[in-house]
Image 1: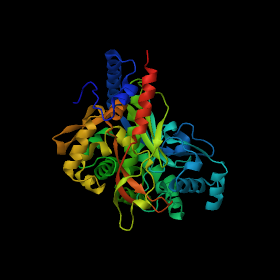
Image 2: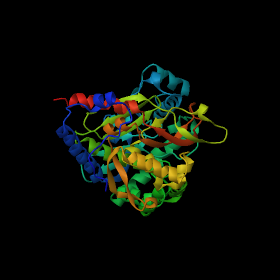
Image 3: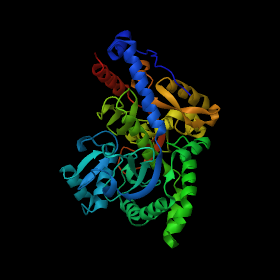
Length: 443
């Protein structure tokens, strides 16, 4: 297990170093931070997320009420929303019955008749646009080791999906099926199971070639195996066949569940209230935001980057939307782009180079984390543990930015996914957080 005091590898000049880390200027201050960081990562490792049910978001998500819609990333004004987020929001307005047509939905949004807030402010996470409205069914994930809950919408599959901004009849019909049939059936199966522990599934999936962000094939199959006996007992006839078909066809189904597990782990670490560990990373198509264990609930933000990677035939970077989604919570807990060698197939798919390049990236990223997580291991690296606890001090000092695997959304709502790649967390978030940490710890 990686356990070491933090030592900077300076990428910038000495002035930057003194500005960011000269606070308190004593070995005792650094030692206190290092000790707090160990408690943060231990809390994250100790969290025990379990999928226990599915409920309408408005029934279980704290504070989601009235005409409110949640979105991915740090808080975002409608004026700064990219087209996929606006398109998804209009679809949610239609789904909720707050408008009878897309023009009417758009009018309500532009008039400020709909309240927006970050999913993270409500114990929730959402993929890509992250749009979550009260009638949408969400996974309920509980921490059996603590008192926290986390929530995430159900994965819609591929094609025309709301997370990429689509809002046509196919999308609304699928959400109504989720609401009226599939969600209640799967929720009943989860209740009948007594809850499905998620960390063991994630551990096995890593051994089977998933990295838990771009590839969730093994994890989705393992979840399918765990829930299927209870789904058969809870559902029958054509409804059962539709549920089985959808689960069998949706290779990324587990991603949303993994995101809720990551939210549990990150927030459990955040509850320590000290240290310099990143406990959330997210993006809204306009800004990238991080939260830090010792800096309260403030977001540290910078303009989001556009992913680099492999584009589907007929598309290029000119079609790409700036990065979107709460799914970077997976990287926050050391998976996805932070453990590329776990999934050699993904390394090429996201345009990160060959396996050796993936290993080199992993080695570099090891320099910006506090510790490792022996509960999750990478077979291609002879069982080395995944990383955990991104330290803002190390990121700012080295210039090594956390790496995130991501789908690439078309910049026009509803066009869908146009590729897959990687994106880095912008350095400005970490430098600004370090400066605040220095001010906070001044004697």
